[in-house]
Image: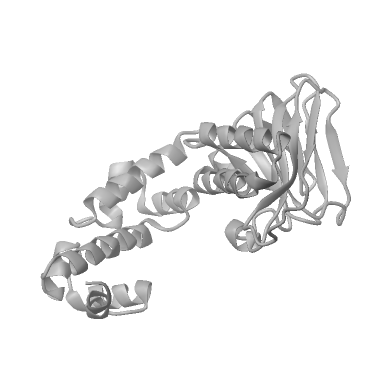
Length: 277
């Protein structure tokens, strides 16, 4: 079975993202696509709900299953299909947008972006279902809601999707988000890379690599961000001196705190307090 829903061009042309078409393939053992470069002008997103399929990536066949998916950028050659013995139930959407390249950070450009969903899988699938139903019963007044449903899909996807080749089939990503929560809750203490890595059960080198893969930044950078956020709250809600705030947020030296605060915000702690306090 194949569902195709085509939408009219939106009356407002500056949505961050907007679907050109969307739909579903299921119980179709012959579904496959071979698109030469330059054929499709929109982004092409597929998310597998059940069954199996594959994407040809750099001449190599990448097997996909429920909870995973792929994204192609505009103009990319595309080669993918279902597993004839276990046909996928896959939701898809072709979309455009103003500034969408910045939101996606180049994903799908040059090669297919393969991903595996973990914590946000049900949310992504529900948002896709909402997008499909709104598109199916299209009303011009619902354009902003349709755009926002697609944005919810992409935002949850970008937050949750691990790299398919390295994180699929493991609890690694979930564990790293638990560690991130631990860092955020304890950043004012005497945390360092070694102590966090020990708690997670990895060497500092291995921990840094897999944390960056899952969260998108190094653990030390993430810890500094958490400390700066805590410092912002103290700057605007308390009369504490800058030196005391540095101590309260886990920095051993006020000069280092000031330099890191300036690097991340573009202003000194005092300038931030004067502006927002």
